[in-house]
Amino acid sequence: MSSRARPSRMLTVGTVALALAGGAASTATAAGAERFDLAERLEGAPLPPGVRVPRVAPTVERGGYTAKILEETAVVASPGSRRRVWTAGTTSMHTGNATRLSVQQARFDADGRAWLEVLLPIRPNEARGWVPADAVAIEHTGWYLRMRLGDRSLSAYEGGRLRARVRGVIGAPATPTPTGLFAVYEIAKQNSPRDFLGPWAIHLTAFSNVLKNYGGGPGRVAIHGRGPQSILDAPLGAAASHGCVRISNDAVSWLRTRTAPGTPVRITVR
Image (cartoon, rainbow, N blue to C red; front, side, top):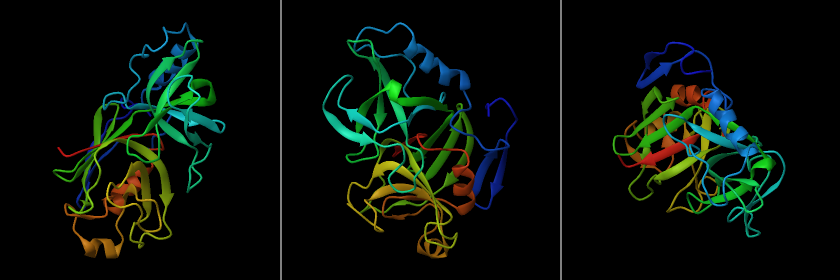
């Protein structure tokens, strides 16, 4: 859905301010022309080895490109390298979502083969590697999430336009929410809205810098809802979690229909 397709309006649902644009968005949206710009550019005359293809990195204004993994693919340390840093499968580790990784830059190697640098869902935070462009489907999302820890606000942008801003619970001082550039990795439906995580958990490529595991998982940070026990545990705006960002159930349900794996997520202090 183009950000210009329908007018938006702000709606307050409890403590949630949502800018409703009418209908859900998918990865192949918002700036559809940009999505094809990158694919077509990589199929054209290659740039010299090592020269970055312009306008690839995710931004609030453009959203970001994603690489949908089409076959099990070695992720390597640099374009054309044989040093493997990870292996990307076609589905994500826990939920079976199609693996979509956020694209950070694109370059050609000495043989003229196109490569994409992607954010990886592994430690350390902001780990990156390179995949051949011919092993993925290049898609585009106009959505971009921005979490400001200082005022506990999560903002959702589509094509540079603010669509929602909500308050959240962030990491406690001893278990802070990590900062950096991340991406949505998986979207997991919970057993019940009354579970501690609420109805949905939007897993990120981010990990706690303090805890190696919690809740049976690897210490992965998520944006998730709030069941009754979570509501009693801390009010919105508190610093009380293990590192995850807790938002209202209305907000996380709205968000999960508009973002998708590969959506960029920037977490900053201010």
